[in-house]
Length: 241
Image (cartoon, rainbow, N blue to C red; front, side, top):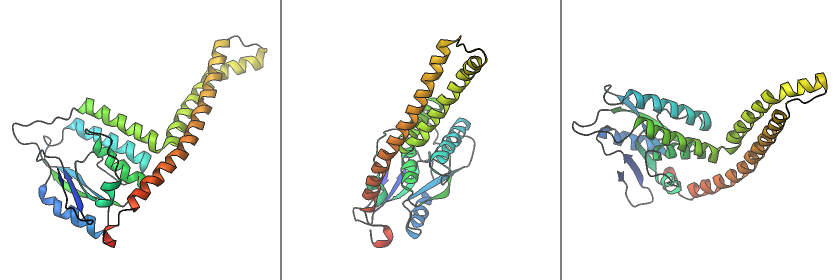
């Protein structure tokens, strides 16, 4: 659910419509957004009971939060919170690409990727109303969100992503090729030619992955500059925008 005025100084409030978040926290979130000139304030969920936040969901959220923080910076503690306040410049610069539970992750990565000021407010999180049930499937939706995170890491941090792929390929090549090289140095023979060819191919693939990472990193920098310009084109709260 979105609440916003139409003026240039609009603030936006997003909250899941399942009555699990504390509505009374909204004024404090918006006040924190305005007073500290932030672009996003996330409600970090504090549970009031085991039924409010299932164990599988808690574990999945911790894993996904750790992955995002590792790749984009440790400035958030609840990647999947569905209760947030935004500035207008954040909303207008956000390219909404997902239509499911992955959207919350995109909000976080967009904010961390542009290095905009963000904040969190601990907020009570309670169980759903009797007779209703969550549409979130811990395994299926968790894998979808993890896939989205990995795709965004590849898109926003291509050098890290392909550098890791290159390192894995190089390690495999060294593991396969070292015995072949040692045998050749000892006897002058290459008795396992297929293994030698495979190790050579893996080294080439490793080099190609690193080159792809370098090229895509430059492309990403250009795209990031365009997003940053779109973000800066909207006046900040403190400047009357």
